[in-house]
Length: 401
Image (cartoon, rainbow, N blue to C red; front, side, top):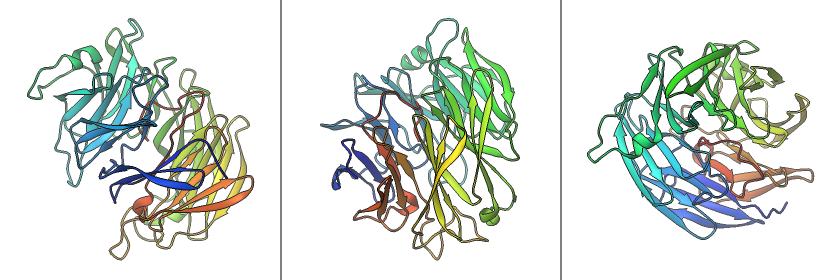
């Protein structure tokens, strides 16, 4: 199970990122605490770096390449990060961190060609972010998704880059036609359409002559809603997992899961039923998706043929030593230990699937030959984060995952 593409594995609780290649490992980034919610950002081809993440203790955007890693100051705690299609500018919003209520209103914009950053203030409350082209001018625009009450805000990138010192307040054009529970954002750089996941469905917007404009809501095709979205670069569609079933978080083994793919321009929807349980984040590659479903009766990795809208393979995998317990919140720790879950990624060149075992310090590699295991010297509490760093022929997403 060798691959010429390096696999990055971040243990965000231990403050270290490993690079794994052909069965060997090395420390790629030390003393850096990846912001778990913001995740990794794979940068477009031609950008000044190949990948980036927010160091949620050191207050820096960590930008890596095959030869070097550099750090650019940003405001923390980081909540979301996104880049423009060129990969030159990265926007980072701030969130709760270790606090129970939103308190920071700072947004950072990083220029990767000059290794410089600026900061300004928006509305407090963990805003989501994408960088979308204006339909009229083509100019890159920062689009912020605010919750409670739901609002879409559009700020020209050029205006943000021109802010002065001392973190001034910056306000853009607002549109309040958005549900107040938005969570999950995508943007198709081809069409400029922005998709936001809410209880009403996939709510779609564009920026037109500087103004955010709603272009319609696509209802979820099954009961429930999605919270986490990714853009499928091969189709320009939004993808997500619609969670339904029992309302109680403690009843997570009974949650229903459905993989959905929605054309952002037309609203056409395809869906694939998945096994019940806790389906956290998922991975994409050309034509396929991979989902790990955690369940007391056994964890599985489900591979989806997206072109045929069907499940092509279900592979049982070894259980985590300390999995979430039925009857308790799946994102709460058990017996004083961190909550354990899994992250996964697909090698865009070979199709090999990597999936972590949270708390056990292991990564499983799944391909046509079977399953092999990579051991790490840290536990990968909370499942860590994975990224196949080489990329393929296209970028699947311009938002950190």
